[in-house]
Structure formats: C-alpha cells, structure tokens
Figure 1 (cartoon, protein in one colour):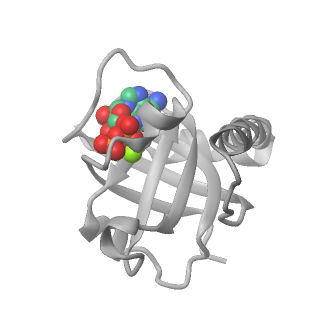
Figure 2 (cartoon, rainbow, N blue to C red):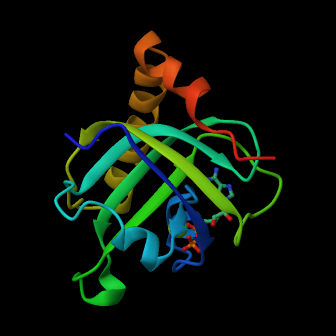
Amino acid sequence: RHLPYFCRGEVVKGFGRGSSQLGVPTANFSEQVVESFPSDIPTGIYYGWASVGNGDVHKMVLSIGWNPFYKNIKKSVETHIINTFKEDFYGEILSIAIVGYIRSEKNFNSLETLISAIQEDIEEAKRQLDLPEHLKLKDNFFHLPE
Ligand code: ADP
Ligand code: MG
C-alpha cells in the first residue's frame, strides 16, 4: 500500500552484524530517517533500487525490522546493495526506492538457514527488478540536484 516508497538519508553505524556474521553488509539509516517511515509499514524483507551519493543505481534488498538495541521498540531499516563497493560509505547519503515486498520477518534455527534465506531474497530481488514495470522506476528517480 505504501509502495513504491522513496527515502533518502545518511548511512550510520549499526552493530557490524551484517558483514561479520552474515557476509552481507547492510547500510543502516539513522533513527530520524527510520522514524519518518510510515508506522504501519509491515516489517519484513523488501526489494528495490538504491544509490549512494550521486553514484549509479543498483538493485537492493532491504530489511525493516525491530531493533534489538532499543529493546525492539524501535525499527531498523537496513539496505543491502547488490553491488561490490571498493570502500565503506558511512556518512554518505543513501537514496532508495522500495518497490516490492518479499516476505515477513522470520526466526531461523541456525545461521546457515538464515544465510541461505538471505541469498534467496537476493535472487528474488534480482529477478523481480528485471521486470519492465520495476526497471522503469530505476531511471526515473535518483538524481540529486547538481
Ligand atoms: P553496520 O552494522 O555498521 O551497518 P555492516 O556490517 O552491516 O555494519 O556493514 C554496513 C556498511 O558496509 C555500510 O554502512 C557501508 O558503508 C558498507 N557497505 C559496503 N558494501 C555494501 C553493500 N553492498 N551494501 C550495503 N553496505 C555496504
Ligand atoms: Mg548494517
């Protein structure tokens, strides 16, 4: 109902869980950006488009979930961009278009099942975003003013 949803904000430090434990870095938005999200947007895994600063637009998968750091009373919004970057981009402006929903949040029995679910989410995101109706959003939306 809220989709597509556009959002832009600074990339901040999370807990470093993404890269170290899962091999999938997730760029975290600040608390202010997260609080600007519609409060009734369902938690779960989404796909869409993302760009860092004035960089190229890439496919992404996004998690909207409960943030354990705040005893699960605040949400976290984390974007994994499907691209290999040479360097971290903390402090840069991340622009995203959330295009579609993949699945709800789940608990996993093991790290292995979690990691394979994430890999499936990434494959699903790639497939969905190749559809013409989703590709057209890529061109329209991300251009920061010069
Ligand atoms: P944190 O807990 O600080 O978010 P992560 O392990 O999740 O740490 O790593 C996220 C950081 O990795 C991002 O803020 C960004 O600077 C960097 N990064 C590098 N490549 C990517 C990528 N493909 N997608 C998202 N973040 C990336
Ligand atoms: Mg992260």
